Each structure stands twice: as structure tokens, then as C-alpha cells.
Length: 142
Image (cartoon, rainbow, N blue to C red; front, side):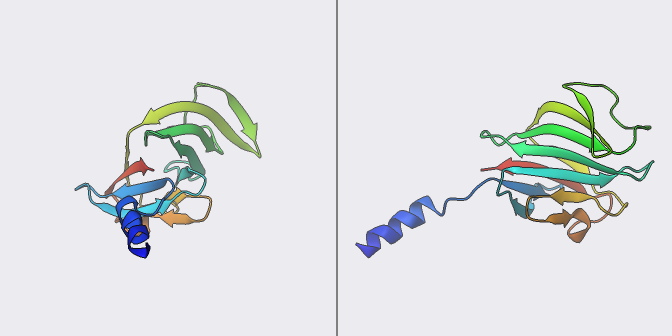
């Protein structure tokens, strides 16, 4: 009986939730970030006005990345200006409601500190694993 249970577990594997995969330019997975609530934020400092920008995503059942909001402190060069699905002010920051879907997101690592991924549990700085200018590809997976 124990043998049957062990065989069953080895065939199906442990059940895991959604995760964000960080791949390098060669397509190799360099980091897996578990997402307990299925969401994450791509966080960076705007290179011109040096203010924090958050792009809030979730992972859909088909593993695509869904962009829900872009949050930022200042409107300036390089910042979104359209209202798309709605525009508001929350806690002194602009919030642009979005509804965009991506199969993956290629990101170049910024030399400005604070660039990375925030999950419900933690913050992962791209500079902990990649060099400025490196390509990081973000992909979702269930």
C-alpha cells in the first residue's frame, strides 16, 4: 500500500501554486518566485524623475501575465498619460487602470537601485542575480 502512495506522488508531483519565472537571455530559468496570491509588481525607479513606479500583474490560468495597474508619483516624460480603463489618485500616487495581457515581458536591468519584483511575501532585486543592462524575461506558470 505504501508503495502505491509513493508511486502516485512521484507521478503527479507536489501541487504548487503560480510562480513567476525569471529567465536569462538564453532562456534559462535563473529564479522562481512563488506567488501565494497569484500576483506581483514589477517595481522600478523612473530614470528621469527618480520616483517609484509599480506595474501590478497577476498570472492568468493560461499562464499569461495580466497588467492591472500602473502606479506612479509624477507625470513627466516617459510616463503614461492616457486614461485607458480609468485614472485616479490613491495615497498621493497616480493609478492608471489597465487591462493588458502578455505571454512574457522582456526587461533590461536598470542601473538605478530598486529595480525588481515585489510579491506578497518579499522583494527580489534584479541586481541580486543579474547585471545592469542584462535582459530578464518574465513568464508566469502554474
